[in-house]
Length: 408
Image (cartoon, rainbow, N blue to C red):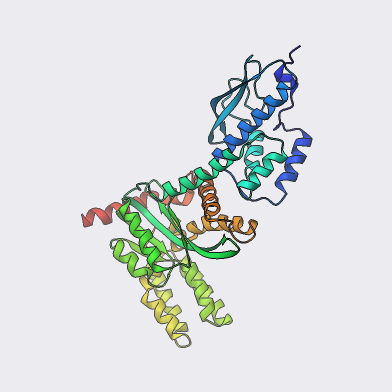
């Protein structure tokens, strides 16, 4: 007698207590983040194939290849290769129910949490094998390759010619090369579009320390890809970068990151003076009036110029670039004074770096992790317009139109 496939198996991803315990042990085993729709597809296809193998051990039936299907896992459309048999009686229990396109909330959370559990392609393969899932090495290598290719495409696609803001910063990392660790810099550029959404425009990895020539190449490449008009450019004060930015975007305001400046102040001022400097600067950032902000800036400079003339002279020279944010809508003003948006990506990558032992196993592993981090942000918290940005969006677009229409 041929057993009913709907009753013969407990789904490998069912939410029984024992399954939850096993999943908890796996997720707590020290593995790092690994989540994208391609791996979801591999996972679900492998589960279905494992179910079919168990079914065929009990039934008088034979395997009959696969057929493609797309299912929803949260907001992800996932392509799955569904295992089938000749009789047509088998149906993987790990798929959503008949006539359902997606999974329930609990199953979605389980799947997505599983994909936040792999340090590398090999770690992902080991995790799947521990769960008894059928997955071939070629499939997982294909997943990793697709992530690398997607990052390369991100660095070459045409981009919107008009942006409200352009934010960029570099991040130092180390990449394993044989028995040595080699320094590298990630040159990351994020754009604030005129619809208020954030988007990573470029994410380039260069061996060696952060340097000016690489920044020239990255920024010029943005223009080659179509970027023309930017209302505000936000960057740190990397030596020699400001003149390049001003020459490439002559009609844009340039805001130097005040957080970087405050860190710099701590290294130039005594501990007591640095504390007072920070307090005065916080009061300046909180002002709602650019004229008042300018007065507070001058008072700050006068307070410290006698003891720290070189540092204060440099600060005064770049006054317009440290105070540019005061000319923008109050709702978004403080966020336009820093490169914190870029730090959101770097912060996620930093977690992956620490979980990977303090460095990345290879250049491709780093690119794969960057793809995971960027997609997670753009499909997650960046998918909707931030409330403060939405509040200021009309004003920002009006400022954009006034500036560039007047110049036209």
